[in-house]
Length: 321
Image (cartoon, rainbow, N blue to C red; front, side, top):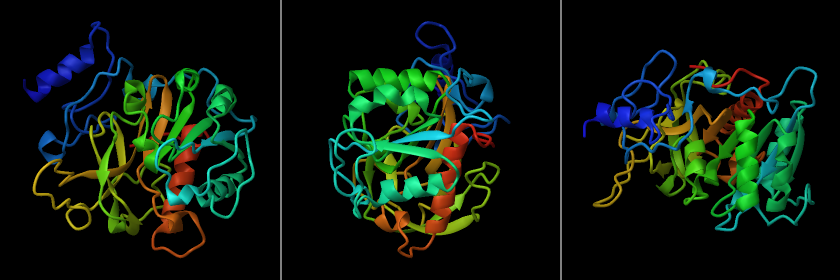
């Protein structure tokens, strides 16, 4: 089947309704001008129809009350539950309930909280899945490396309702290592998921879209250290914000198996999904990125993440291209 034929099948969906919205040939990432990268420039296993509207047009947004409006309190919830392997930047596991004590090992939670509070945002945090029934009261839900089966049935329903009512979802780093058997969540990530990564090492991040609020303060190229995730499936119908220079940084050097992403290796993107907003980045592995410890590019990472969250909340314009 040709690429255009596959794209047409996806747009119609199983029921014949328009389930997927995008631009270009359907394999790359689009924007509202109809531009997209070509299939030969990316790696992909194909595109899944998740049965919802998704893409980069603001017409797909449901303004049903979960986005922030002038005069309202700005509120976010950080969720860092890890039934699976736990990244060092999360530190010790948190006690049940909302806002349990943090210690010096919980560097990502502590510093992300401080970054957002400096913006006048009220921040709650938890690793207790039972608390997710309360997320309708927030402007953004931040999955901070929450991985594997981090959402039970009740939490899955709560997250769906939150997004469908116009809530903002922010996925950071190992949020891509979660819920492999939940297709709706994979779609929320941009139709992408974690496959594997290279050893933590320095690379060059290329800012490919400097119109978005999360990238406008970033240089066109900046040095950063990360694991550089390889993704299967590959993001589709999204606005790619930043890539890593895979020619010099992350060529997988494999003799067989998954080939990685030889060209066009995205690390951050955004899109509208099922009525809500999703801002996503695979960056954030290295503990130094979250602390005062000096690491090249950490100030750009902080600016990128904070402004991405502000846009997902509705405080700043979202996903500009």
